[in-house]
Length: 207
Image (tube, rainbow, N blue to C red):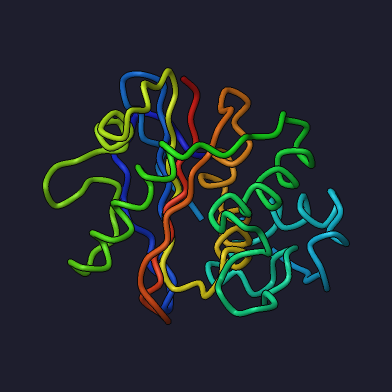
């Protein structure tokens, strides 16, 4: 089981990386430890049982065996939604409903806070919750105007679309803990890069 208040570290497996941390003021990182199994044909067909089976199974960093489909029509990496990043709400809220926690709403401030580290990690070739300039999830949230009471972050690299990234996060206990943490009420999603360099940042918060 993961313990709070430990320094975050990177988890690396073939072509796909994930890491998670969260806090209530001040920042209290959670170390992501390695949790999988079936695929569904559409997001609408995914059941709570499908999601919980993945959350209680072995880790699959690739997301290929998670509950959500491995491909998305249109090929842009997002579910159909006029505000791209907000489309993750379909996935994260299905996960939270399965765990019995309230749904999240999309936050443009958290979205901006999540986009910046994704771009920086791709530009500078690293994967970490602390930026090369010393920025943290807390400082990035505040810089985007998000005055949080609680803040959390999941990151991943190598997944071609948001379904795969979410599948991977569900399968990892530390990331899933962030996904379903009851205190969070809002989310934002950042994505940068292409192919195996595609880097995802999910920020979750309460203000």
